[in-house]
Image 1 (tube, rainbow, N blue to C red):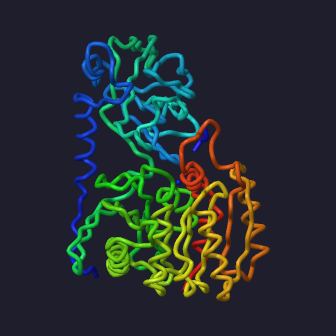
Image 2 (cartoon, one colour; image 1 turned 180 degrees about the vertical axis):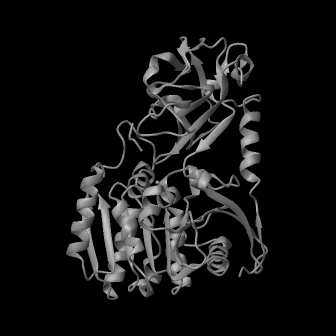
Image 3 (cartoon, rainbow, N blue to C red; image 1 turned 120 degrees about the horizontal axis):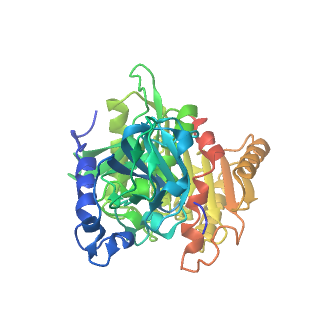
Length: 443
């Protein structure tokens, strides 16, 4: 498995969404449609577990977003008394249907490079476990960890903590990076349509400074009304909001959740493309956002929508990252002066020939294009080196056209239709150098 980051109408905040979703997660454990690991003989697993015991106050499930999925990657156990990091190892606990790859004590309920004496035991789990996936194509289930302390444990004060009498199930969930976004609803005055969106606001936001904004638009596969889908489906939004990227480029990240499709192969767009453009403009009035450093990116339908927005609103964006999309080459000539980085797989039956046609049209109209073919299985360092070489070669270019070599994008044993298409963006959005390029551009 491949391992896989002034409004036209008032904006209503929906900060209660996370609380509601958390309640739904717990409720899902008692209803039908339970996750595989929650189903046991005799009923749902919540009936044979406890939330806490004599020494454990609570268990928290931790999730991370990968290229095409969200996975449960750790369990954090809070004890009622401090423990010594030197006294613990993975053999002291088990997690149902999961493999523990690392166990340590911490003084805060979070993962750490090194353990520290404290009340929290962190069990890092193998993300490649089959039961790790909680959101992916055809998968949507709560993050569930069922933990047992299998042996007696010695506390820092020398007292003994007996092995668990019953397994413990998590009552909390931490979604890395996803939880850093806030949910809002934009009501568009022109159409009356409402659009739910996720917004990452830079930590330590200073209203006296100006910040860039990145718009990410998802593909058709996660279309729906669950506002977190666009964040959980892959790296497109969360890669820009991760701590490493934000340290280099503090920025707003906007990720709308579309209830219907944005664009189709007849080169038509829904009203939500225009609603999104008005939303972006409204945010520049609500926050100190630099209107000269607005960027758009998207995968598949989101890529097509980015092209359509550049055509209809040519002065809106400073630069665009296009991933796995296409458009009508007969209408795109006006984009020849745009700053674009294009990424597509040679295994993509539509986007590869489609994007070649667009780039040819742009070149005919004066675009300066630098091309490169990369191995989709390259290491992080190899991608960084390839990107640097491409930028050096095309120092006077306004477009960079990267294709992933045929046969290097689709994971082994994956044979589903459109694999060359959908496996492009898990790679494209994990290349920091491409994201860094975006932030160097301005109008």
